[in-house]
Amino acid sequence: HRVKNNLQIIDSLLGMQSEKLPDETAISVLKESQNRVKSMALIHQILYESLDFSRIDFSNFIQLLTDNLSISYALDAEKTAIMIDADQVHLPIDISIPLALILNELCTNAMKYAFPGDRKGKIKIYLKQQTPGQLLVSVSDNGVGIPGDLDIENTTSLGLQLVQLLSEQISAELVIHRKKPTCFTLKVPLQQ
Image 1 (cartoon, helix red, strand yellow):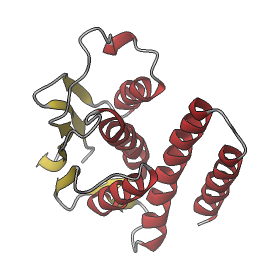
Image 2 (tube, one colour):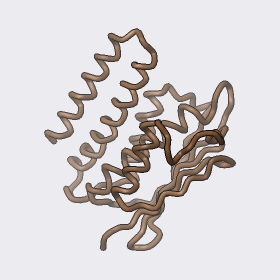
Image 3 (cartoon, rainbow, N blue to C red):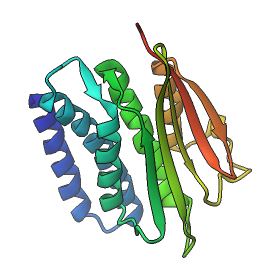
Image 4 (cartoon, rainbow, N blue to C red):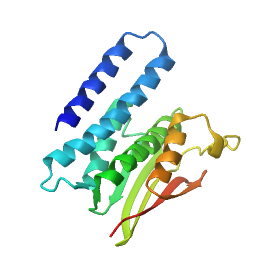
């Protein structure tokens, strides 16, 4: 509970700081950091509301995350549909927090870049327990795709770097499909 409250204070401080900045790039960076903090706070909120403090209802988290990001980026539901296909999966906190940050980054990227101008499309989030020992997670969109000249392995994008580092942290196999559809798929091993 204290962790959640501290994260909410950090979120508020970042929000207050961004109101004082004239530079749009700096405001954007603070908003992304604010959303990362909110993602961690959501995990702790779900944990606090749970009867089992060792496991998180991750399907519930995904809905809260996408609702939060849709508000943060003023997503037009008429233009961009979000579809969630998630099993009810309860994950330990040591997987939940990195996976939450990964989903935050992937959903943020799709919301910001997949549908420029008046382009319409869908963002799909998939969470399925493949076997008792493996979770399959994917975020895909039918947008413009990842530019061919973007070196995903050596990018300067903090978001994509986080996705790769956090995937390694939870020993997940990450597969990236650049377009038609753009899809990031993670095979996450679960301890029995």
